[in-house]
Length: 332
Image (cartoon, rainbow, N blue to C red; front, side, top):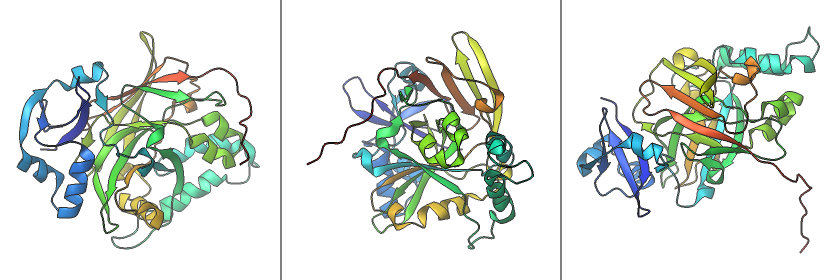
């Protein structure tokens, strides 16, 4: 049975690691953080499930209650947030090109294929190499460090200069880097790769700006292999109403790239194989409320869920207001 792991904060401020293989969740004995567990396994070669089994389980935890009380943390953090990297890939899912292509079609002549469609077709034609071979590289982007990470249940803050704040329901791979530079996958989690689609739509070269927004993942990490076909739901709640609900698909059966190819093109850079670092790499989506004409508002709740990944990922939208004055730089 698949194991799910998460982290909660106790009333006295301590972190507890929680594991479950069914509906009941339990504290993992002697575990101070998921990061410490993962790094220990990266060095020893032991699987996380086996390591947790050897440590044993202690008292039961009411995980939904902890979630409602705001005590659920991101399922992995780094002691130094600057050593946790939030990154992702786009145009990786079958059907993902249509939304992006529509966003950028007005920028190019109708008879000309958009850059988004070109990138998507490259993935379809070369993103699924045979084992051990390297396929075409995907679109890639950087979102930030652990400073940009919002806990499950917390707000995703849209800055004053943003033109939009919209959800992107995805799966993320969670990794730690061993002392010898090996990337080691902890597991997979639901993720909201929150982005500014209006800024991106102005010009494709604004993609990098549009991605420098917060992100959230969890509440739980699924250990082991990713199912080939993941079927989930993305919705937006406004007060008592659900203003958007749509399925999202992931897993390699629904992707134009293999996971191995996406992982290779991220970790081929020495920069991303620094010992002790944590990586949360989001694999893309084909479902956006933006494509349905939805404009999220302050206080809306984003909810992403999929069978086999534990509790749904919920985050509110916080639209900041105030001055958007130029940032002054001090000369030293």
